[in-house]
Length: 336
Ligand SMILES: [Zn+2]
Image 1 (cartoon, helix red, strand yellow):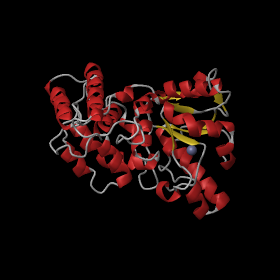
Image 2: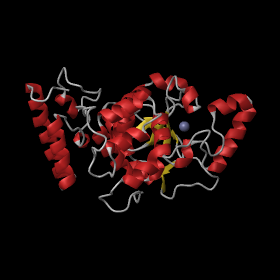
Image 3: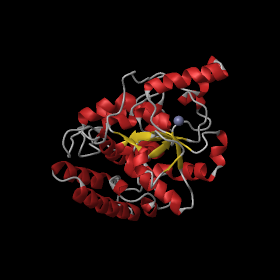
């Protein structure tokens, strides 16, 4: 961050104003935002955020060597901002309160959030406007009830002309479909076929499947590679197993393409290599969960690209952010 009054500070201030204007036309008006701009100018701080409405990669053009940028290339907010500073006009939340609720969170996560709190809250607002089920934590310790079934499941046979299905009876939540179809189309343009092998699984089916693997592998191995009933993300209707559902999928063209590009369409690799202790599951290069585009951006920029870290954080703090959020688009969480 440049010293106030320096040439660099002048450029930063200009950029802050520019960015603030874009924010103001897009989302914010009124006294809160004017105060925010004024404070940023006084401190020579650069306010980040709202740039998230641009396409991925666009913000990299703003990078300037020698500035206090984080890895996203976005300018950082000065650490000297006072506790009373409100980082985002849509949240009744001061920087001091944000610092407080991040106590105990790993520095790898807390650091980036406090470096760009406005950008973080901008993504938080977008996520709060969506179906809360998209980020619901489901794992070995957080199981879904037996009667949990999404209400907007669609039979993928209806999309048979646009999807490659490896078997009949596949279904997903409707909310997944626009981004899934966009992703499949983008892969096809790169010459890659994304074929779907497994999608929604009911509690009853998981029960049958788990019993089957216990028979085949024994209980201990079955528990490492298969989910107990209710512990599978597939019951959410937003998880997809692509291709062969085997280890070599990681080096298959479809596996490589997904690893590099799925995040841009809101899909996240649930069980990455080297995180078995964290996720409770072995590396599954074929298993992706739809969490939405703002959520995969948040996952990459603040949670090291690890879905489990994002979901656990959200599980513990969603209510806190929801209570402080002033929705601009009707009641929060009313989406499907
Ligand atoms: Zn799976």
